[in-house]
Image 1: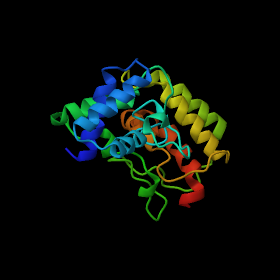
Image 2: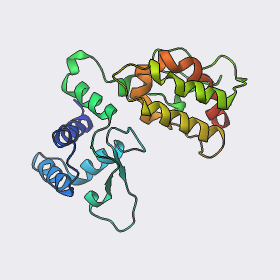
Image 3: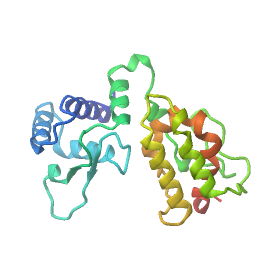
Image 4: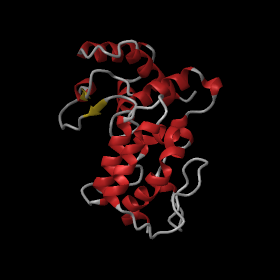
Length: 215
C-alpha cells in the first residue's frame, strides 16, 4: 500500500469510529495519534485536503485557506453531522479489503484531462461520452430527466449526489461555474456505480458543460 493510502486509511478508519462526534478534540487526538505512528503533521494535512469537498470528497469537510493559520486542525470545517461521506465509507472498505479488487476511485474517476484530440472522453472502460460535438441538448429538460433517474439508482449510492451533479452541470453550462479539468473528480465513485443508468442523459450534459475547454 502506498504511503498516501496508508495515511488515508488511518484517517478514515479513525474518523469512522467517531463518525458522529463533531468535537474538535477528535481532530486533536487524530493528529496526535498519527504523529505517534510516524505521520508528519503536514502530510496528514495534505491527506485531509485531498479528501475534502473540493477534491475526492471522501470526508464531509472543507479545508479553509486562511492566511496566518499555522494549525492545520483549525483549517478543518465539518460540513454535516458525520465525518465520512458515502464515497469515503466505500473507499475505506476498499482499503480494508484489497483482495476484493482495486479502488473504484482510482480505476475510473472521470477526468477531463483524459479527453483526446477528438473531444472524446474515456470513462474507465466505458465508451466515449459523445461521438458528435453538436449535442443540441435541451438543458432544462435534460437536467429534469437526470434528476428523475434517482428512483432507478442502486441502494448503495446516495441519491443526493445526483442532485449535486445536476446542479453543477447546470451551473457550468450557464457559465456560472468555470469548467476545469478534474471538476467531476469528487463524483468518481458515484459515477462508477451509476454510469450505465445515467449516461444516456448525463453524457450529453457533461460534453455540453465542458465544451469551452475541450472543443
